[in-house]
Structure formats: C-alpha cells, structure tokens
Length: 125
Image: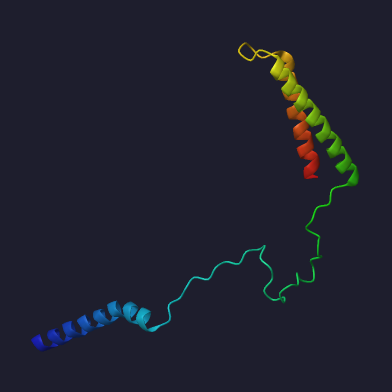
C-alpha cells in the first residue's frame, strides 16, 4: 500500500509540474505573437498600387472650392473689418483709458466681433 501511494503522489507531482511548465515551454519555443494594429478607416487601401486612390475616389474631390460670389463677399467684409478696427484704434487712442470705456468703443468692438464671426462662417462654406 505505501508503494501505491508513493507512485500516486509521484504521478500527481509530475502531472502538476508538466501543467505548470507548459506555458513557459510554449512561450520559449514558439514565435512570440505581437498584437496586430487595427487599420484606420481613413488609411489608403493597400490593395491598390501606390499613387492610385482607388476606383471610387476622384482626384481633387476632397478640396472644397469657395463660390466666387462668396469670395467677393468675404473680401468686402474683410475690408470693412479692417476699417472698423482702424476706427476703433483711433477712438481708443483719443479716449482716456484710465477712466471707464466709452459706450461707442464697446459697441464698435461688438460690431467687429460680429463681422469677424460672419467672415468665419462664410469661409467655412
């Protein structure tokens, strides 16, 4: 009976050793696996030769072209913005900045801000 217990414990210890050593043996002998990066949806298609964008893309389709009428409107608004900013600078130079700001100065600054936002919206399209 002691012989069979000894044999059982030896078999159990050997099986446990094999199970514990298996991950170490496999990682040492097998090629290490590196995680594959997830391809970007905006990346060019690797199936097409370099220099070609693929069948569904047209060259220059990404560029936004501004309407000529909007270009003229933007230019006139920029000119007006420049004139308003010059007037504001002149008024600020003439007024006493140590006391409270004149209401006309604040209104001019608000008008400039509004015009700048309008130019920004026009240039976005």
